[in-house]
Length: 550
Ligand SMILES: Cc1cc2nc3c(=O)[nH]c(=O)nc-3n(C[C@H](O)[C@H](O)[C@H](O)COP(=O)(O)OP(=O)(O)OC[C@H]3O[C@@H](n4cnc5c(N)ncnc54)[C@H](O)[C@@H]3O)c2cc1C
Image 1 (cartoon, rainbow, N blue to C red):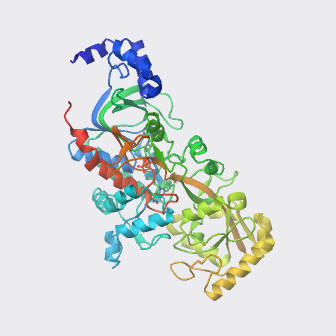
Image 2 (cartoon, rainbow, N blue to C red):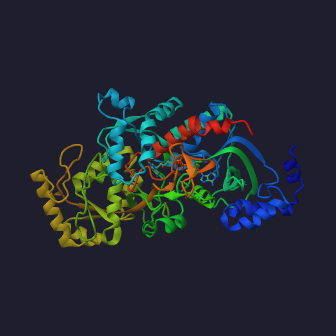
Image 3 (spheres, rainbow, N blue to C red):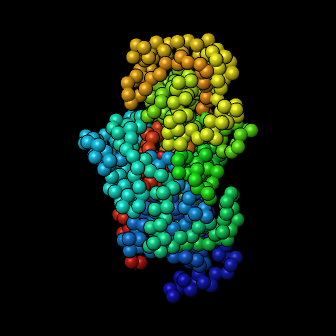
């Protein structure tokens, strides 16, 4: 035992608590420097815990796609990995609740279909365009250049690609559908098969740093936390040669949204876990976790942030107070009526006016909604389109439960025998809506949308609004996930506010900010998690994790 360790052992519980509170809670940064230095003379390293409850080469925080990929890859390279997850299982993450869509240029299904002209460069361009050219280009490059390799591994590990389809905002047909739950099960199966140590119900609360070097030495966590509040538990300390933050985003935290994206907080409607496999998760949560813990832990030790206000604003129909499931206010039901791929209706604001090409990427529509009076939209369709959408029930997005609620008037969907009647019921301007519908029907006849340039040709489809009853359904903003987060370099090391690497700290997944820029291009966020998790575990953090001490 070293003399340092002996001295540490000799610390009283009181000293330990005092030292830990000072060191761990941020005494490591400028403010408390004087006190801490004085303490250091008297007592070597009083900022460290008296004992580490667990030790690992690599601590991975969060068992989503990023965390599990990192853990598997690092384990396979010989590292002793400890995966720490606050939920009772890996099925509470965004990854397990997401739509399972991943846009992967040169994916095998695309190649089989004969689409040979796609490339990482084209995806890069598409993401830059939707991201309004504000993306962190180095991080974006890292993603697009490594995505296919990471997904090839993901599929080898048991995640099953289902179909390849076209999604608005993408210049090529390259979006691979998966069942979210199936993918998480495959990854967790690999974790169990390898015997990778995992602590569930354990919420990381702080990063423990070495005072003189600012190196991350491990974490403080609360063991034994349970849903729904994840509070309480017993304090433990875990030592790791490297720590990987893979704790996901912050859209499950009204407090974080209010602080970093106030324009969204005011509108927040909570997301029900996404389609389609999620609804089958018996132990799944009302909504995925995304409490922003990783951002807070990073910021507390000086990590820099980027794009924190950039929230992925999906849109969907809120379920009303008298409907089952109220409080989980968003359902993607009827999305297909406006959605990119299938049956395209029109969208209007409170004045009954269209305000964007409905064929734009869904998150562009969400962004445009924020600028509209009342900050909502109504999808307008007629009987023909409504019937087609309900019948198609594409990806299970129009389940009978929701159709019944709509027809009973329990969710904000209205029917009218005339456009005027519909507008009055839906609270829209009747004259405005009538004019919009008349114009729209003419545009369909002419094959040109002179207002917003929406394509009238497949894969976009344009239907005239002719046959009563007419339908209006209200959509609200749904902050699902976020594009902002901690700043990282191209080795996914977390940077401090001066641009220096925080030694021993890496990130993967939604914790890393800036890949998507201002606006998220659908089906690129989950792939970022898979790709960055893969890279951190296999390449970037493994050297440090396996390094011999001293
Ligand atoms: C409904 C929905 C649908 C979506 N659909 C798509 C889609 O189709 N395509 C796409 O590209 N993107 C989609 N996304 C976004 C995508 O799912 C996420 O960006 C991605 O899954 C994030 O992965 P991650 O591993 O970084 O985080 P997560 O999967 O969220 O995992 C983070 C894990 O960390 C745990 N954790 C958090 N804090 C702590 C702590 N303090 N201590 C210990 N553990 C902690 C959480 O419990 C969680 O299990 C969707 C998101 C949602 C919510």
